[in-house]
Image (tube, rainbow, N blue to C red; front, top):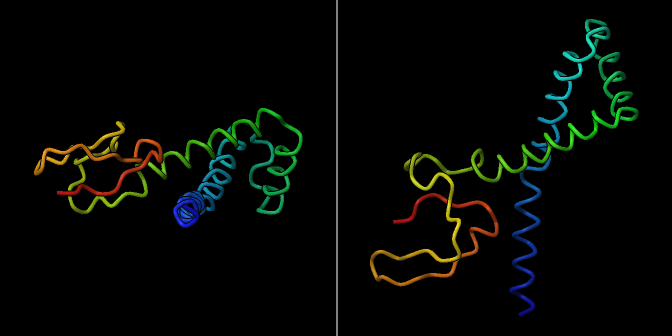
Length: 127
């Protein structure tokens, strides 16, 4: 039982760790674009001024932080469900994964208990 819980914990931490830094960087870049669409007066003054303006808005503007967290969450979900998939075999097969608790084996006709609906991601198609 201890090894099963250890493996589950390792799988969860690995699945969170992989897209985490990508989501942070993509969220920061997107919020830079959003900031200079919303407040263009600081644009064109160099990278240091842009970073300083971003940090000031992040510290003071609650709506800016909410939008950053929302975009970070959306990026994490998209990375887990669609972006980080092995699509080389058949890109249209099983795009959304298994959303039920059981998967049916067409060869033997058995129901197989799966946790893919809980993890919210699926591997490439299995034949």
